[in-house]
Length: 476
Image 1 (cartoon, rainbow, N blue to C red):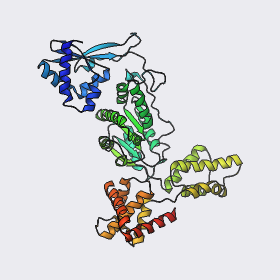
Image 2: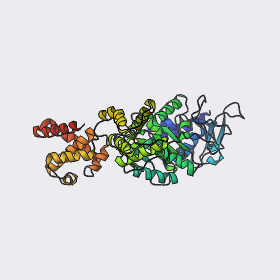
Image 3: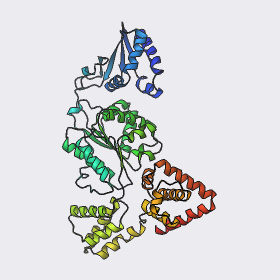
Image 4: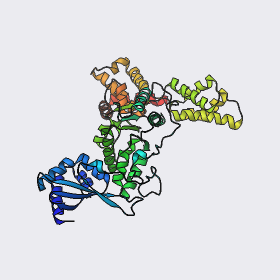
């Protein structure tokens, strides 16, 4: 490397380092090497095509400012890009590209590996993406046709339908679907992806669990393929990431997902995220990511009501080719309320008992088969139930606890309802606040803290908490 090029580039780096975050400098500028200086043309070597593209899109202004400062207004920059070997070359090679001329880079003419194919040295290098069919990892059984619509999921399903027609073209980007386990958020995410592929088969759709994404990132980092990993994900048209709450506490993965999210969003690509928590309730995740999760539409899928549960059972019965009386279906729908998985599991248990023992499916067989499941399941303690219980205890009309009044007795009743809703339901803080007087999650947190403090310092208030708690426990 020429001493002149080395000196000029070091001076440029000093200027750049003072004007961008330390992590960004370490990631994007530390690996760059100065190659040569000819007059006022500086050539620098970058590790990959992705590096070149990222610098041109995000840091070219500051790079050119540093060059002008050191070489004058006629300064020019040339990238030397290290390319992978292909079937025409036995060794890696490099190409020189002037700054701001990305069109001159041609994709490498190689046969790209299938997504995540084991045994491939670097599965994330996929040049010529337009010719490549990536395995979307979608479950073809999870369609809109077998996703039963009800009050508990209508908003999420409707938004998903709109997204499937115009991925990246609606205000629902990202679509953030959250719910307790077994309520169909993963099913809906797959259904959206499958519908996109049906309507626009040229779109690149990819489903990945957060656990798998984290594992891939770790492996890519160890293999020094980090930038290719980022590049791979930034080329997806519709990215579906399941259980995004598992990114909690993983700082490195959060940082790389931030880059990917920004690129996709700014490029008009669609992002779909699922979680068992609302964005605001996910702990140990950078706020810049949480704020992006809330950019589009955050929608909760709630526990299905009786009518929806009955429709789910009828559909499964039709799919399995069996016939059950309405009384039997009603009994199962009335008694299994937790989630869709347990509901379908209960029906499977009944069918299995009938088939294995060669017995007719009667009400007696159903009751006996599901006895343990029903007796071991908790009563359906809902936010509405808790509000009514608290209002009955204090002899208050329900609309008072929902009102905006600041009278002390009403405020305490409202705070107790929020406290017990948090303790005995799996609802998010946002949902609790919305249902109890249209408050926000911060109000619910404050209410829970206040109840805890008064429980320790106020004997009368402690008796309120104990009495209401006993009533709820007696119902479980």
